[in-house]
Image (cartoon, rainbow, N blue to C red; front, side):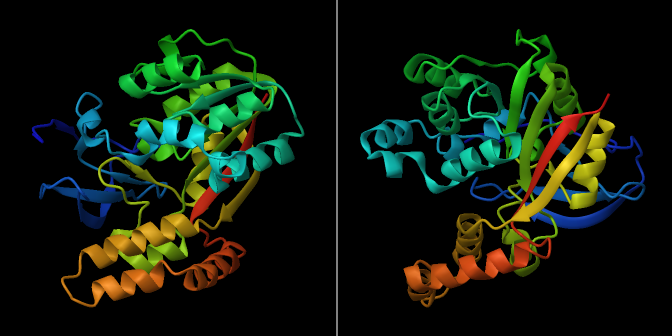
Length: 313
C-alpha cells in the first residue's frame, strides 16, 4: 500500500489555542510503515490530540477493507446466525442503554458513523425509523443497497439532507475519528429534536487499559484516532457544542482490553507468545479480566466513556 499522504498542523479544537505539550510518540499499527505520529496536549484546556495529522483528503487510506467496523462479509455471516448471536453483546448492550436512558421504545434515530450497520439493523427490527451517516463511500453504498437502511455519505455533515427532529442521535466510538469533533457535535445539535438525546461513546484516556498497556492500547489507533478524551474534556467539548451532559460514566470493554493485550504480545519476539495467547484467550481468564475491568469502571477507569447529552436552550 502506498502511504503518500498529506499532513496538517492544527490548533486545539476545543479552545483554539496553539500552546501544546508533547505527550507521546506513536507509530501507525498494522500498516507496514514506520511513520511517527505525535500526541500532544493543549496547555490551556487539556484536550489531547494528534498533531500533525493526516488531512481529511488523506485519512481514507488508513481505513482499509479489513478495518473491523467496515468488514462487509461479516454482515452476510451475521444474517445466517441465530438471533442471539446475530445481535452481538456490544450491540445488544447499546440497545439496552438507549432504551434505558431515553425511555423510548420507538422513535426516529440517526446513527453517525454507522459503519457496517449492525446497530441500525437491530434498532430497525425493534420498530425504529432509522437513518445513518457514514463517510466511507463503499460501506455506505452497501448498507443502503443490501440492508435497505438510508445512509448518507460525504465529508461535510452540514451539507447533507437530514431532517432536524431526531429523537435520538448516536455516535458510537466516532468522535475520536473526527477532524473537528466540535463540528460533528454542532451538527448533532442542529439535527436533534429539542427534547431529544445525543448518546456517544469514546475511548477513556484515563482507563486502566491505557495505564497498563500504554502505546498498545486500542484507544490509540494511530492515526485513525485523532483525539483522546478524558471525562473533563469530553464534558467541556459537549458544553461548547451546545449540550448539557445529563449522564457520564465509564464502562468496561473486555474485548478492547484483549485486543490491546494481543497488540502487546505481537510486538514481542519470543517463543512464549503463543502459549500466553492461549492463556489470555481462555474463558476462565477472560472472566477474571471482565470482573477486574468492571471494578475499575466504578472508579472512572473503565475502557470507554459513555455520555448522554441534551440540547441547552
